[in-house]
Length: 110
Image (cartoon, rainbow, N blue to C red; front, top):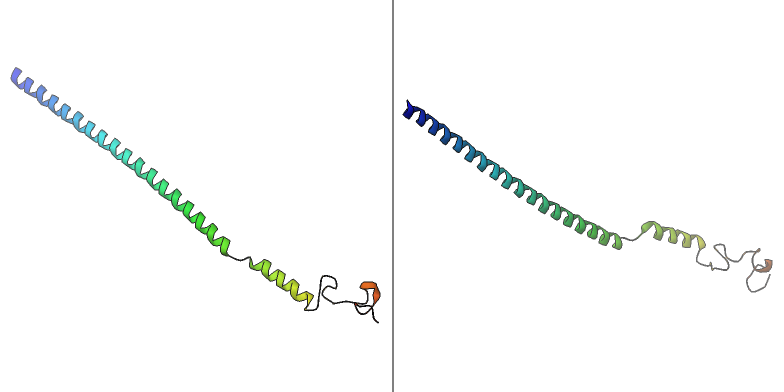
C-alpha cells in the first residue's frame, strides 16, 4: 500500500501544482489584459481631448467669419430713419423751425 499511497500523493501534488500553475497563468493574463485596457483608455482619452480641442478651434474660426447680422440690420434701420438729407446737425427730419434759431432754412432766410 505504500506504493499506491505514494502514487496518490504524487498525483495529488501534480494536480495541485498544475492548478497553481494554471491559476498563476490566468492571473498574469488578467493583469496583462488590465494593463492593455488602461493603456487603450488613456489613448482614447488623449484622442478625444485632441478632437475636442480641434472642434473648439474650428468653431471659433467659423464664428469669426460670421457677420453680426442683428447689429448690421440695426445700423441700416437707424440710417434709413435719418433719411437721405439728414446730417448730424439736422437729424432725420432735416432743418426744422425749432432748430438753428427758429428759422426755416439753415442759411438764415424765412
